[in-house]
Amino acid sequence: MGEEKKEETVAEVGSRERSSLQTDRGTTTINDAVVTSIASTAVQEVSGAEPAIDTGRGGGSIPGDNSPTMGELFDRVTDSARGSRGVSAEVGETQTAIDLTVTVPYGRSIPDVTSAMRDNVLRRVENLTGLEVTEVNITVKDIFFPEQ
Picture (cartoon, one colour):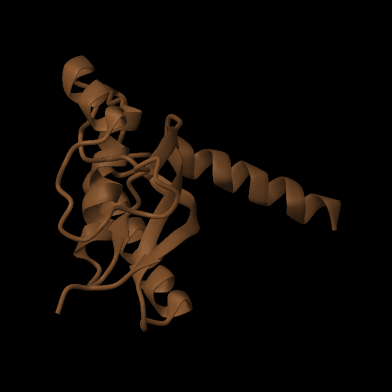
């Protein structure tokens, strides 16, 4: 039994060495911000889902209220807003883990929406970066009422 475990470990190491990001001609490093941007876009591709934006108002913005929050003003001044709030990623040499904080529309099944988000984020990040996505953790922060 111990021998099998050791062989699996050797096989795992072998597959990491053959990563498309690490070759005998050089190494490609993917920045956290790249994965975060891809994941944010992938969430938005899922019908009815969107990354949560913390408005500081305890539960979303008022419909029709387009005035910026202090956080949004700060982001504009510091150029730190890049459409990826509600998404974070930890990127290693060949793997990444992603955390999402999202809102979903009222009336949609939260398990269905989050499953679709998780699948789309995993597929997009792996296909576009070559990184293995080890986990996609999703926190549903709020619901919203879609405009009719």
